[in-house]
Image (tube, rainbow, N blue to C red; front, side, top):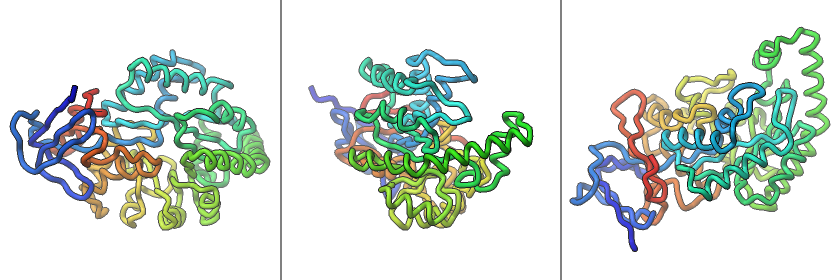
Length: 379
């Protein structure tokens, strides 16, 4: 039996314009888009209708699973709590980050991330989830055990994105020691001597493992058509290395030089939506708004605050960065979808999945009124 639903009196954010119009969904797909109002349709009261948000990088599942140091929550309960929060923020497709490789900042025991992935897949089969969940493996290439963790996922079709990270001191996110000292010495209460030894161990591990692990993981991803992301590129050499490895997504570049080179090479440059909301990076690196002003910001990620993903595009479109609303919305919908090869979603266009969000925005923080995934109301 054909299932059809219609909505009218909406400000529909299309790929290049905003129209006042109506939309028809048929069997989970967008069947028709028209200007003006139609009869026998749900009236959205002149609010915005935007595509469902596509989230490529969120660590939020980890926060639900391990809400306190040393505490582990029931995996299914953690997944459902995370899913409810992302869906109510307008996110219909989410790449859940799972950590590969334990460093001295902690980590998870062998097999824990595999258990989490299995629980995610079971939750999907059991119709527990509002959003569509895929997996993003965050690979700490300087960790001795990163390949052991990665081997648990080598045959998993849910893995669609892999990022290559190295958080050792003196490079990338931590080119200067100020933020590294705050992150590690101050948080851990280390003495000067203990901190110096800690840094030396991290740098030695990076020198020993990073290049080999980066090469091996990238080769696997290229062979299996998995999108590769760089992480915290700071220099032109970093960008060149990313290009050699077939990277398509440049996550959180830390300098204007690296961001521009990545964008000009055809990589999608991703920055944190919290960076837009706060107006600055929490780690003291380049501002996402600065990249937007230079026309080299492509994708936003909620990172550690799910609601920021729907808040940031409206802020960006209202600012002085020269970004209109369709382009800002594309940073959280069409561009991330295209970057990871999801060509069936990310825009309000005839034939695509009916993933969209009813948003009321009259200034301040947007309010998510309803969310649909494949034509099914989930919020």
